[in-house]
Image (cartoon, rainbow, N blue to C red; front, side, top):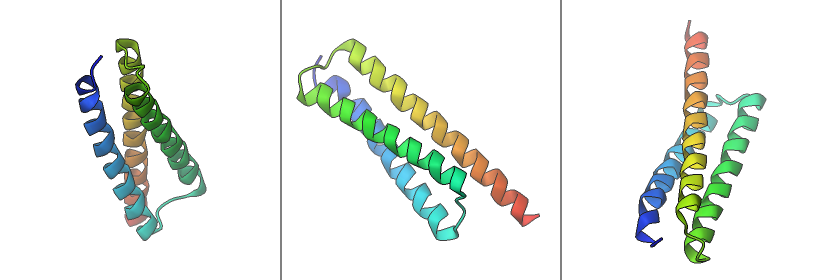
Length: 99
């Protein structure tokens, strides 16, 4: 597979990276993270690092196969979904405190 076939994954991963970083910073500023949420965020960050490493290894190491691409897509989509659940949970908790 060519590097260009992985370009969309790079773009999607970069967008997720910015979104994750911004949300973490926002909630740290507001002091909205509990220990459980911190652990969940740490797990997402580890997953992010793993996906990033897989993507770079596939492209730079010459192991860029269709199977590798689909595996990376699956892992990235799972991270995005987990992050969405975290955002929903944090939003729900912030709404509770406002009541």
